[in-house]
Length: 254
Image 1 (cartoon, rainbow, N blue to C red):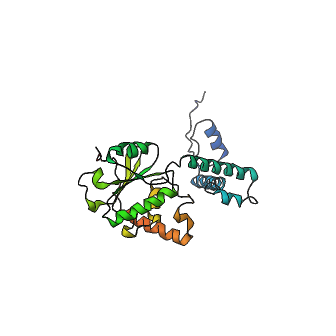
Image 2 (spheres, one colour; image 1 turned 90 degrees about the vertical axis):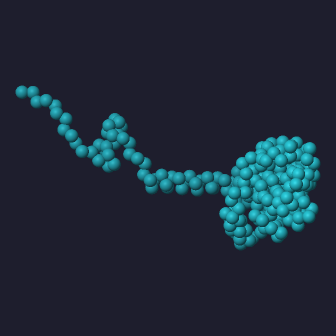
């Protein structure tokens, strides 16, 4: 008598790491084991440590790189020296300004809106009667000399917009790619009458006109305690000042 082949159900724990399960996985009978969360985490941490090690010289300036000659591989160090020299040369080639540019209303579109397609433009709508406007005017002069690759402009507010309220002065507009990407109505969000160069430099970093690692920044020339206090101060200001960004430019100069 022929006995028919009757499949006998066998319970298989697919999560087990056994030779039999390996055979079944190889034949596609059961799915491959899911990677261990612990192994994934360890792999991600190892990759992060490796990236940090490989990029350890990314923010070093030329003088700092020179101090590492006895510690780093010569070829690796020379790569970053060459990269930094190229960046300096590029920055110098873009240093077309160096002073605040006065703008008349008919030139607003060309000097500010269109110019922002090539790089950041910072426009101060000013009023001589405003103390804060005079403060910002002086700070813009310092910024223009310190960051000659950026364009800083000044236009009388009542010439840019008819009957523009003096109470809104200074108004500081940040343009990029033809649009306003940030605006400040008075210096309330920055420090009021006591606004400093460090305060306005924070704006340059926030909009990514200047890298946070730039050695020209005041915050990078002070000790760590002062830097930490500065960061905490502006974290609080950022929370109070949400809603100051605008998505598009008001066409006020037509």
